[in-house]
Length: 328
Image (cartoon, rainbow, N blue to C red; front, top):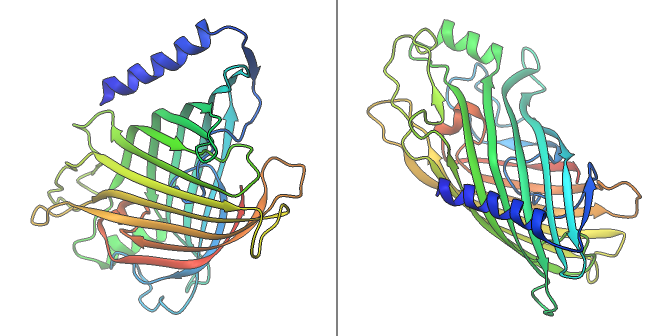
């Protein structure tokens, strides 16, 4: 699969170099092949306020089910080079991006503790071909040849674990991966009712290193098994409406869902890793009557699956319910 990713990147480069009647645009942002709002890691700006049912059992506050938590996802895309062939209705885009996701117990006690921070960056390229079909508006392929993620458990969380929890472990998630996805009806600049689909696969570049590593001091000398399952599979649905019930050209209604099959990690040699399905759902409205490329919106969010934050990804049967203010 890694060689197929390299071939796809070579194909994109060939199209750019040898196509005729082209236009090259440098450092100009675009909506083409933009991540869906439901994608679990992307540079979309989201501030979410909601309730969760569990953590991994090591958190120093035990009575937390009755109070809200805050999850912030901050990021930016950095456009590099876009290529357009209007006669063939073809677009090729490329950009870099950086972002971070932070889960905070804003209301304490005793302080507004940071539970976990995920940092990520990557490079994205893609090709989109428009068609004349009434229902199939375009077809696309999106490639992330390099994605890096590193995660950090909050200091207060870690200090409490070292001092109070006999078998506490601090695991450092850090990996480089690739992703390949196929898209049907990318929303791009289409301002009408549209059903979009995406499916893809993500894998590690260095399978031997796995997703994480452990320092013997940070795990109190415990034996930590290596991560073995290195592939993730995902399906995305995105349904936008600009006409119909409770929507308009100014208020775009969006329902977007990601179903991702990924590994629930295990840091115990007596417990095996397991593959699980995880679901991330957003439903709400974007206010599109603004000149800025990114649009503000308000969404209801529901997540169910393994905890998606840092080393807490060894815990399943987790759900988060809340409201999300987005800048998309």
